[in-house]
Image 1 (cartoon, rainbow, N blue to C red):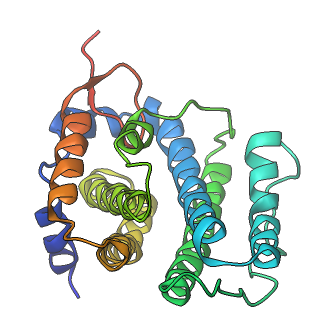
Image 2 (image 1 turned 30 degrees about the vertical axis):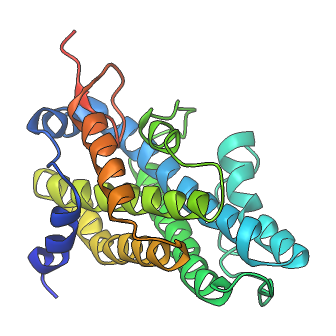
Image 3 (image 1 turned 180 degrees about the vertical axis):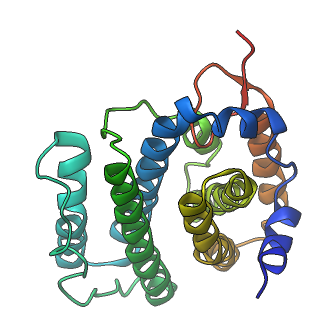
Length: 253
């Protein structure tokens, strides 16, 4: 499948393109460390989000503990500065996850989210390796308002909460994919090849999230998708004073 074909459903799902001013800011050499650090953070957060969904809705306690152990070395390194960033011994989940009997979509959520976690952790490792090769220190970086602002609109009762959370996940993955595609032609050969290579999995992640949202919801999700589309568009098109991977239009200071 060509890049254009991969992006067709994503561009149809998103209500706006990434503004040119964000791309111009993102490709400035002085912003490359921030771009790479925040990209790495986003990959880890995507894995954490999938893990939390599994622990909250789909797996038993021992399986939840196994998920925590799987991500712990990555979290220790990023948040607690423990270790040197060598994850060669922390690639696979240590046990088969057991689905809760009271959640009808547990097996599907497990299969899709475990694959997503594996891919996001692999992408995290790839970004970290690029950072190391370029002498980029893994400094602490505040998160953008993007995901937090989207999650403010998630309803608090079930199954609406899970459905809304999955819709948010779909938008985050879709926007990531769109930005990888927008950035790639403006970057050096290594980063262009790397960002292009991410498109296929990120495109599937968006579709997995949206498909699961449709299944767990007890009603049509069109209205909720439209709501989150409007919120996501506003975040992308309004000004941000901090540059991040999912930030809005860079403010003119």
